[in-house]
Image 1 (cartoon, rainbow, N blue to C red):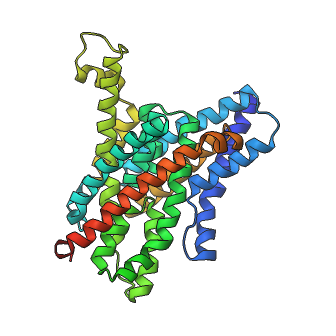
Image 2: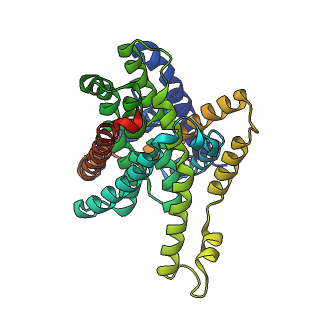
Image 3: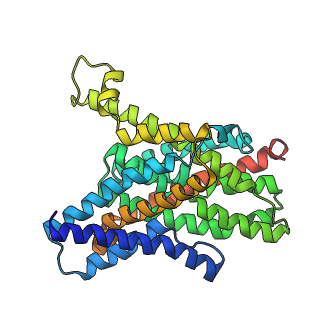
Length: 348
């Protein structure tokens, strides 16, 4: 392997490791994770990319390898941490709201994104990141829809900004509105993107209500994250339909045949791993290792993405995606708060 390509891979791995470890440092300093490891890695590599005068072809080859391969492996390991059985667990009551928000988020992102002139891929990533689980959903969907690095970076930036606002403000808004524990669980679990942000918001609410045993928000978030399995499969089928429509597949091929030809193998293994976890194939230690490894791989992959992004491109082309992220985030937030008010009796 070329030395510069090897150097690029090593550098992405190092940045990914340090970014992942930084979340523990953030917790020690601030009591919660302010910025997830993948976003830290993306920003660090972007800074390096803008400091380095130029990045040659061989080095870019290494960063491209990281952004694609590490992303695939991270997605597969994430599947092993999910479970179909969780849908029937304690967060099952939130499933109608979760499904509605998924439809709302994608609809808002695609319709408004088109009006703003944002690419369809970026709109899909913003919609998926908002309605499912932030960076993990963006990483998964980006491989299915073949999004480019710029589209991934824009979507990540949009999701991070509004996720941070939600994580800090929702506990106090819920307290001001006099929400019950379950009402807060529904809102935080369905309208805050990243799992670490939900955990942080839940910890704040625990302190406010003096109940350290309250875990409702994370229970709802777990069910919501599991829906990534179904969303990934649906988008794979939609991409197969587009391939057939655009003549990228054989004219006589059925949709099933096109799906079979185009189905990304990492999604198949993602589903297989989720199925294995559903039947209890992994120990608690194994699950912990997979969660940590998947976060590290996502961070290393996003480090690879960052080495291709210039700040001038973010500021000149990224404002519309960020605006789209804000509008989509607002739609989901309003939906969750209205549900909490209108169906307070159902929620409890």
